[in-house]
Length: 118
Image 1 (cartoon, rainbow, N blue to C red):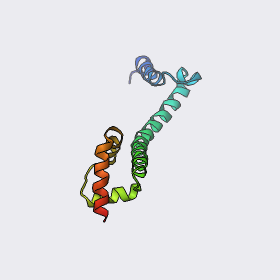
Image 2 (cartoon, rainbow, N blue to C red):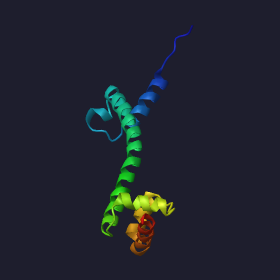
Image 3 (tube, rainbow, N blue to C red):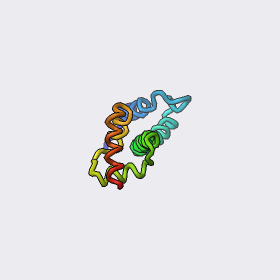
Image 4 (cartoon, helix red, strand yellow):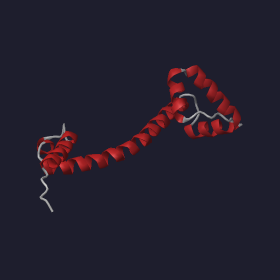
């Protein structure tokens, strides 16, 4: 069996890791062993972050809706309950955008939600 020389393959794999570690601080950007560990950890955190981003946006929309609802004398939970009973099928993202961009339209939605609660 002939001897295998790994120069090209090894150089290519190291280059791939160091390219992924570009922008890291200290020796984690140019020492291969530390860079490999840092890149693996960064990939794990990036996957977690993609999941958390969805949660954080939903949380932000709910906070915005709660503030807009309380300014119109209704709690967020009553508003969502009223929307479901009134068959208003807008999601929280759209409702929060309407609350910011079109307050008059949001007032109409609130009126329908309040009417369906009675």
